[in-house]
Picture 1 (cartoon, rainbow, N blue to C red):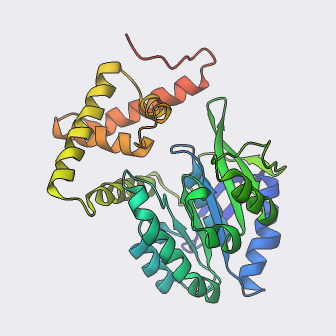
Picture 2: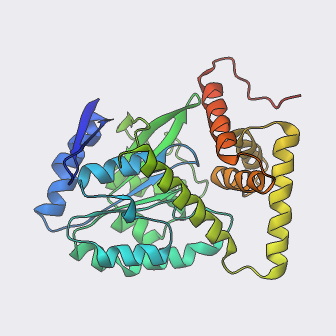
Length: 315
């Protein structure tokens, strides 16, 4: 593990560990291509919700561009378009959770369109773009195959977060062509020897900035839910949210356990969405949603670290 040392424009220093091979690739391939070869760099960071993919994306963006800040983390096609037009040469932008939300399928077309339409601007400004999403298989085929340089697939190993596999241009292409039907990352389909670890350091600095980011992200998720919904759909959404909140409390499940349960039964509700729903309803009921959310996350982390954890609901 190498140490990434970032000097902020204000003179402060941010430090975090980075896999040696990843750091070497950024130092010798990505950064020179932006500043010496007049190119851009589009990277995809994917993985299931709560796996840490945003954390890894921020660490890469900050290492490539020391001026990267929370204003260049965007959550919608309009925000992304504005960030690209405002960006200066060589800057980094993170398009965070591009397809997250319960309306993700309806959002595919506008997001893919804006990525394709801004490809020339991204190249002319030599931008480093990191697209964070659940799976690269949801991305436009042109972008996925020809405009993205690499894929970093983030995953958990025995319940522990902080692992990734990197697929370069060649292996990424094979993965998309061979694995799309089943959306599988199995080494039996495509194997990559570029693997590594990362740790949960928020690369933008203070805890206050991290809290601002989380509030911004939850608001973006909430706003996406309100888009293009008629009165009946809003009513059904409210009923669904209260049912999710009831199920969680009745069964005594953590966010992760409920997310796993929904995934098993093919219910399209994300981990982040469950957290937002429960926090919002807790707040409506006068409960301390923030402290409760922190307790939930702490309980999940303890469960992951416990070798005897069976993740069973409370009786």
